[in-house]
Image (tube, rainbow, N blue to C red; front, side, top):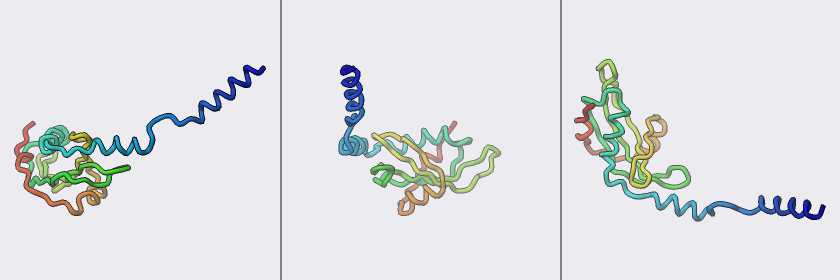
Length: 137
């Protein structure tokens, strides 16, 4: 009977110990992934080639330099992109904006929801992005 009580106490005591990284370690891991994306334009072009139904004949393409912005529990490099692409029928859909979020120097997520894009891109400084206008299938 004593052994059973001892095993029960050890099992309950084992549940009380903290397993995993501390909050400081999690923050350090998050920050270590904030590497400026040197090839952000190439990553955006590769993504847009698969994201758009018709990646050819894009007009009025512009992009902002990646900047650190609050994302989730910390900051990430974020680039804003603006473009006018054709729909599957061949007509232009009108200007659209998106947000590219980078982790460890690579494109991690692309957001196209207008409310989120407005928040991230409210102070973005756009520059022409002619490379996006030359995409092919």
